[in-house]
Amino acid sequence: MKRDRLYWNHLKYQYRSDIIMQLSTMIDWRHALLGVILTLACSLAGQSLASLPGFSLIGHLVLALLLGMAIQVCRPVTLAARESTGFIANKFLRAGIIFLGFKLNLIILVSAGMKSLIAAVFVVVIMIPLNYAVARALRVDHTLALLTACGCSICGAAAVMGVSGTLKAKADQSVLAVAIVAILGTVFTLIEVFLQPVLGFTDGQFGVMAGLSLHEIAHAVAAGGSAGPVGTDSAIITKLSRVLLLAPVAIILGIGEAWRQRRQSGDTDQKLKVPIPWFMGGFIAASAIGSYIPAIGFAVPMLVKAAYLILGMAMAALGLNVNFAVIAKEGTCPMGSALVCSFVLLGLSWFIVRTWF
Image (cartoon, rainbow, N blue to C red; front, side):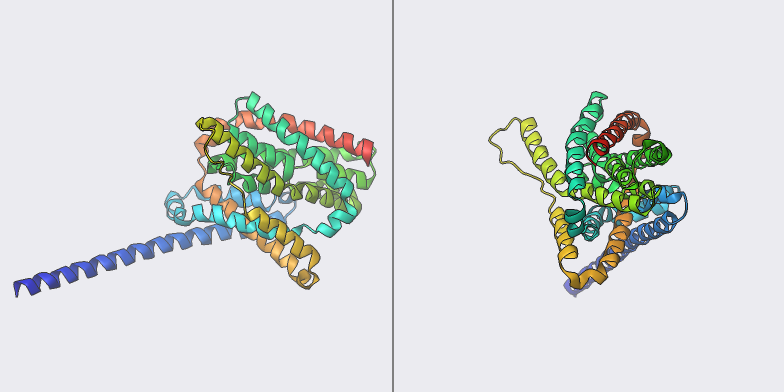
């Protein structure tokens, strides 16, 4: 009898433990769902705000990031949502970049923008090392220097997020790089719009300069739009030529980081572990599918919209995890280096357009 009683007590204890475990799992899932709902709301709100005058210069992704940061005012909600924000910032980001590939029409880029593509390669090859060198001269951290270099030289926030996994960047570093790109991109968009009447360029030439020099697609479209439809089209084609370079740059950085880590370890016999961003293969595949398979042409606008929605969720998740103290402490030097290099980029773009287009 005593043995039976002990057995039943053991079963009751086990049963209660299972219930407690299930309840804790349910609570975790509720917190995870809260993170999904919050980031989705931020992305949708950022998308709506970006369609309003003035906010379009900031862009959907940066607005989603800012809204995610604003939610940190409510600390209990932020802590609960962090059950899933790490996953969203990581996995949703990769999914969003893959879907973003549908925005790149390779046929149009090759037929209408070969000169723009060559010019984009020239700009990226010069500006990434220059941005990095200036930032390091100002004692900016290696990873943050590369993030700002890619953001300013390729395609803004999407470039920062695209290489952050390869560089194993911290959330604070990614957010700071995105903020720098967003601020400077907006400032230089206004500068170029004011310069447009006095540069003496045709509408198409001005659009090319905007596409070569400005950080985000939204910035290039806004500046190019000041020169009319021709300027807008030229800006988009040139800017997308720079976006196309995100995949090869991410792979090259992965190889470079692997060599750097092996050199720092001092073990030259160590096997080289290259953190290849495989999702970039999906980005290129999506570009090819969207360009060469007419049957899915009707779905491409929806897929691109989904890409920005998912990327907006990833940006909001980053905003929920950001450490404001770190940003305030480390923001001055990278902002200064990026400002100097943005002026250089503007001058280089002007020179390329003046001499070649």
